[in-house]
Length: 363
Ligand SMILES: Nc1ncnc2c1ncn2[C@@H]1O[C@H](COP(=O)(O)O)[C@@H](O)[C@H]1OP(=O)(O)O
Ligand SMILES: [Mg+2]
Ligand SMILES: [Mg+2]
Ligand SMILES: [Mg+2]
Image 1 (tube, rainbow, N blue to C red):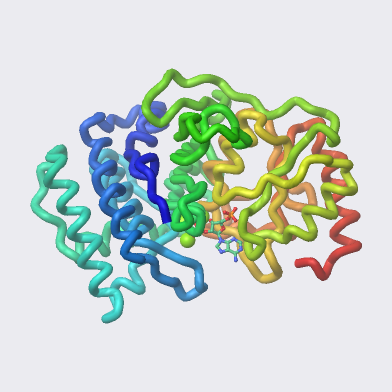
Image 2: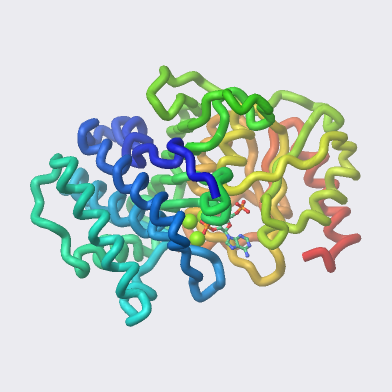
């Protein structure tokens, strides 16, 4: 596996702009701390530091480390606010005997990082502190108050494979997503379809409700406003779907694309990078049809939803209902998630409905 340096960018760097939008002051030195931990964590991955969760999905030291540091920094920087975080990882496995070594490793890395950075003048975190920082993410969210929503590494399978992944942070206010930041360290700046290996990679998408969506390079170029594709012609549209067929039925999406008249082959990439790429018009449609029984989590969509919606796109479930982030940690939805521009949505919904009734067994 090749791990490149783009994987190691600072998480909090990625968060700087939207946090400034809500007038929270995170200084740039603080932001640098995650560079170091992710670099080390990536090295750890080379030593096959990948574990399996109870739902059989992978988790790495990077996922935990990212959640610890984002949680730690948000708590430090938001002392006056009631701090509520809905995040993917929990400390359950790390509290077991078999998780001891992983916990030690995360604690060591977090402390090395905090010490070499020096921004936070704190004594070393204990393992209990680390577990607690992870467990900050236990909030149930809901329709009242403000809740941060974090996927510390979205697309862990892509991360481990050396492909696309994202760090996704959203903010819910009274059940609505009001802010979204999506860092895609491996996404080419020009287009997801870029074939040039020398193209610069690393995109940061950020969106604030009513304020549009902006993209900048992860090393700090000026943000530019982005828009979804304006195409009305499905023959010109290309569509995104999961790289992993286990996450979304490729058969069903192929039948929908055929009905619509989409000519291009699917673009299969991991993570919410799909939402980012769609928000700047790399493709016009995103189809997601998880297999029966899978329940979508809010951290897998909050940031991406915000980025696409503010860029002029529409996100709905397969029945055309808007996504409801106010119900807690899960999205309760009808069958799947579909994303496109306003012009294409009616014909897409029609194709989805027909395909679902003809291919119910595909899920
Ligand atoms: N069986 C599954 N079906 C659908 N999505 C899944 C499944 N297992 C994990 N996921 C989550 O779906 C997202 C991956 O979707 P995609 O296929 O679009 O990359 C990730 O958020 C991943 O979580 P994680 O954050 O742990 O990677
Ligand atoms: Mg996961
Ligand atoms: Mg995820
Ligand atoms: Mg994740």
